[in-house]
Length: 458
Image 1 (tube, rainbow, N blue to C red):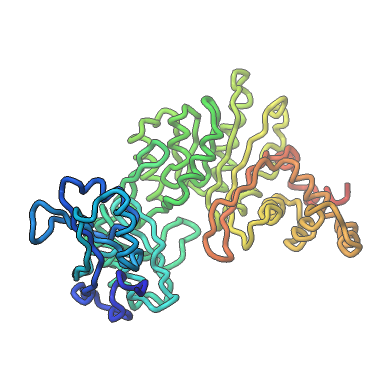
Image 2: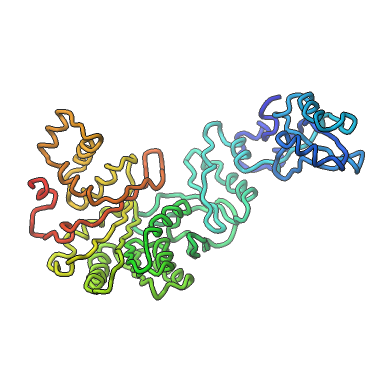
């Protein structure tokens, strides 16, 4: 029995305009008919062989006798009725059961979305099974070869995925500044305002105007899990509040900022909705300015307060650009060294995109933007040094010449954690580096030589 017998008909391959009737097909399946009084015993014995399809029950009342039940079996698993007879013969007498084949009709309603799309789309080019659900919106990121099928894909998902009323497709890359994207509605009606729940909080936003990715829920919870009651969180690129709001719920002191006015407005509303307005202050400004003014002033006040005993965390979740904001910390406390006496330095959680998931590549981006490395190429050399401690002659010669491994090692001692958050594309990984801000960075003077050169000469 061919394995495709319970799949959609091959004739639908290449369909671009959804024709639900074209999916109808007749197949012959094995069945067992028994008295209703022993149906439970028979099902228990044959459970692994049942024909399981969408919108179809494998057990039904027999056509010719209302006191009997007919059990439909999977023709791929049951290649011979003798197998079934043997299994049932051990628990039921042969005069209590009859065996045979029955023709049934399958249709569009009997298959899941993935089965329908696999049957329709070109072989080995499906690529439409990956999606996110945000509230009532199903979000796709279709590749170019699937665009001719986009309307059909939208209709199939509307039919098959419960609790959604709109299917959208991203039509451009995410804007690095405001973290939103243009999208095309493939099916459904209504607006794009959604409400989602994450980590015990409720977030409402206009999905068309702000950034939200449900795949980051675990990561958001992982970072918030590091915060304790009384800690301080500075959220430099806060979005609609996936870090700030749950941190406020944990009774942390939070200053949250986002440049996108739509994100800022949603952030304010989400703080109100989750009853954290007294603990979360919201700002709508450039990240550099936020660090050098609001963050600096508040941090100095915290450190001056003899009763403050919490930890300080800084989140920077804008993977395309966040590391370029790190230079704003250079010299941030220069001239006010007195507030740094016996303080616990802030922990920065910065996100980035890298071509590979090696820790040293991610740390290298942080190091370069803080002035520890003057060239990206030095990251690779530093990584070679750190791989296993063994240096070949060429690597040793290069490291002795540049001294980059010393500056790199100086920063790496401050790194607490490197996390591979998710694989965005085959050569694009989202990474997080959590590190304690080095004191020499905070005190760096603008009129002295770059830190990387100073460390190399040490």
